[in-house]
Length: 165
Image 1 (cartoon, one colour):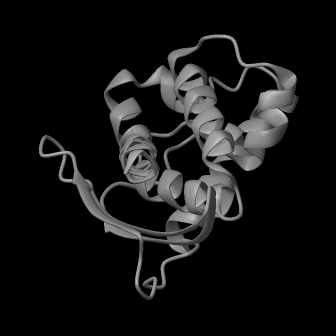
Image 2 (cartoon, rainbow, N blue to C red):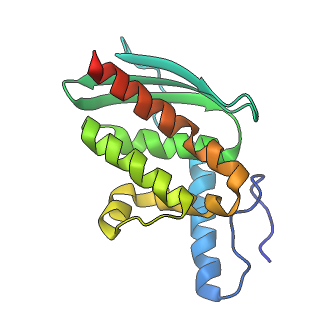
């Protein structure tokens, strides 16, 4: 069995096959990289969206800032604290949404939710999610799904609210 080197409950599998172990190691490396070196953490000057989201049950919290030009997210800043899963997820989200339209962000949030619920996600959606697939192992730990979704739900809801104005 793969040891828990990460401090987040080990997302690795049972070690049944060498290929599976390598894939789990890759996923774990992606999550650890984003946890240790989160992307898009600089504050956004004059953000159009500026919100705080938190999960009071586990202590995960984020400050999310977006600059929106028309219907496109032009700049993202996400900072926060919490477990490796929540931090890596927010970092992956920040990388993904910059330069995307609101409909692309909405589609990504929907696909990510379905991925974590174990529901069907098309190959095209998986391709668009890219490295975010690394978080798919979280669904094996239902208590951690909220950690992975916190920043996504907050950003998605804030963007919808902003565009409705």
